[in-house]
Length: 619
Image 1: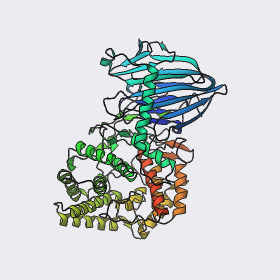
Image 2: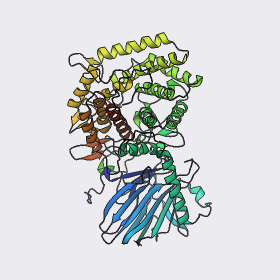
Image 3: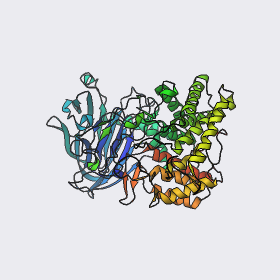
Image 4: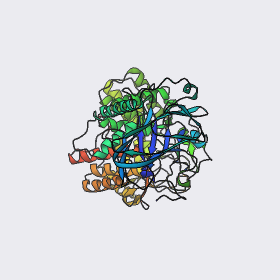
């Protein structure tokens, strides 16, 4: 419930729109409370999500009480929100426009269309842009008939509307009007560098421009979603997840962001708040693999090229994440003027973990190469030089400590998942070299591969309990161990893996959902359960023959999605609320792979493939 003391809607109240460049979150009350233009990692121009008073917003909603229903147009990221006041009903349509190529040069506009459905509805419009994460109040002025501009520092917004609007104190636009059945009104806004605004050419007719953008955007998304090659029994959630993953792609470079938000807390009022508007190698490879499974090969090629460009083609220059343009320096800063979502400070931009040593990325790079090879694409000499460099680096570094998949802040350890990913890099490297006759020091690679396996099966395995453990230094359990079969290190139905799965399920379960681990992580405060881990459990259960339990767990995890099928990173099962950045790509990736694992299990296909015999099933 909202109140003057707590005006923030639940995270689940938000919808997400994107055109693979700009992103926004829109509440059930028709308010744009988070918007980054012209890129997903740009400073927010509306940021009420992180400070209700200072962040800025753009709201179109009935003036009195109303009920809401909403949906995406099938196969698209076009949002429809229906308001019903009892005296009338109207529809608010929201989308970022797309041209046929989704090229960087196109004018990306946020389009809002109000359409009367029945009776008469009185609406109020509030357009309050605040630039640079709420620190800059831009100057608003009427630029031309039906055209307004907001300029502050190096940022400008151009707004076109046929709604009756008034400039308030040179800082906001407000309006109040009624819409009747069959009537349509429009608001279009786009980013424009301030130095360009006074030289803007005349705009076309507003209604015609709006209809053109709606048709182009609908067609673009339909062309993409219609290429999906999925089993006929695939559920609507999986289709929505695939579209969401595409929406998290930065079209110009092929980078894939983890989430479009920063600093949504992993626990309300605590300090575990991170900026996720970057491209993690690990999460992106997961995404590429999920989309590949659904027939989208182009995304794999573009991300492969992005990683090679960003790392300068050298394993020694690889890092765990990059900016969407390939930028390497992601300096972390706190924004003390923002109170944070529900007073959860700090609000931060950048990410300290960018420079962490996380050994699993080498395995991800080689797994992506195996997927690429299995899909019939040639690995040329230049690409092989890069891959061989990665495998050689694993030979040198596999025995180092690292910070692991969870980016622990309490110091490095010998994490079993990281070691298994190093083993996977070597196994894939050996298989590719043998298959294609590539020049490689195979004897050294095989010897190192076998040493890693021996180390994991010795120091990373609890002989007394018969389970794999989090790290060589401890006997704790970790949900990342559920990924060992995906890597190909062990079969899903291997007795050791079955016991490990059951132990994790018993020890890390919270009301049917899994925590990541129960070991110290070097951070203060609490966090919610981690939804991707629950979907990883589904995959393990399904491919271990426990189909009934797998379906039960799958449905439990799906219950954490909102009415639009969007999921956050974490969840509070006690208070039944989403936590963490939203929508979270890794959650949707894991949901897709869990559903495909259930499909394979229903068809009698197991998941015990061996690395080197084709791509290892991610599920």
